[in-house]
Length: 117
Image (cartoon, rainbow, N blue to C red; front, side):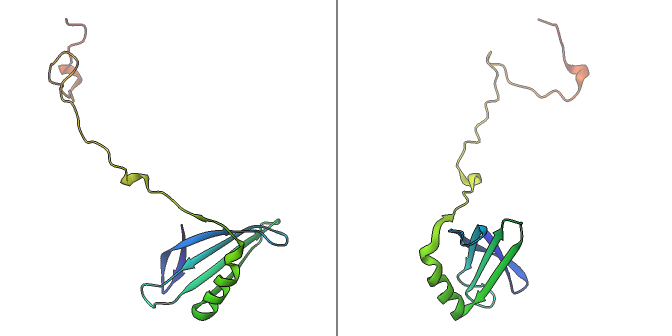
């Protein structure tokens, strides 16, 4: 998931990988369907060539829609980033050790009784 700068802030976009044409190594298309502030439809094509030179093409509204329709056939896949923090996990914590005695947290080392049975 990419970000585009529009109206003074970054907005999350859908990112598509395209078939590289010509001497380009990487082609990436970012699509912002609607800016939450101005409502524009924004498309940005980012290309990297063999010498690591970056070129970008950025279009808005009607021209952007035509440009996206023109490039639809060259899309390989859409990048999806999964948020693993939303996976449910248990917060269960057992306060007893294997002998059935309640666990204690000793913050002072002098209270530890090492070697005592």
